[in-house]
Image (cartoon, rainbow, N blue to C red; front, side):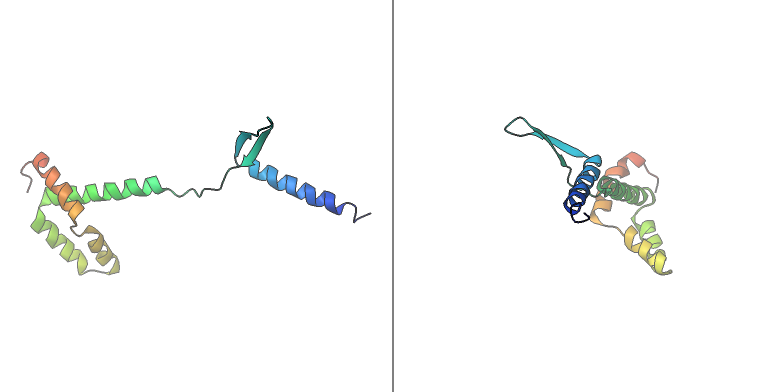
Amino acid sequence: MAQANLPFEKRLKQITRKHDQLAKGAVRSVTSDGLIVMKPRAYRPKFPLRFIIVLVVLGFAFKGLLLASIGNVAYAERVTGLAQGSVMDRAGAWVMQVDPATALIADFLAPYLGDVR
C-alpha cells in the first residue's frame, strides 16, 4: 500500500514546488491551442547596482567640489597628510587622490564658486 502512494507523493511534491515558484512571480503566456500557461519568473538577484552607481557619482562630485573650493595645493597637502596616517587614513588618501574625473568636475565647478581659494 505504501508503494502505491509513492508516485502520488512525488507528483504532490512537484506541484507544491511549482506553486511556491509561481508565488514568487509568474509569466503568463497563451499556447497555440489557447491554453493559458503560467511559468515561474527567472530568478534575478536584487543587487543594488543603481544605488552603487549613484553613490560613486556623488563621491566624484564631492571630491570635485572639495578640489574646486580649497584649491589644488591645499587639497594635495591634505591628501598627503592622510597618506602618512593609519591604514584607514591611507585608504582614504587613495580614494581622495585627484583623478581625471575629479579634476574635470573641479574645473567645471570652479567658475560657479567664485574666488573662494
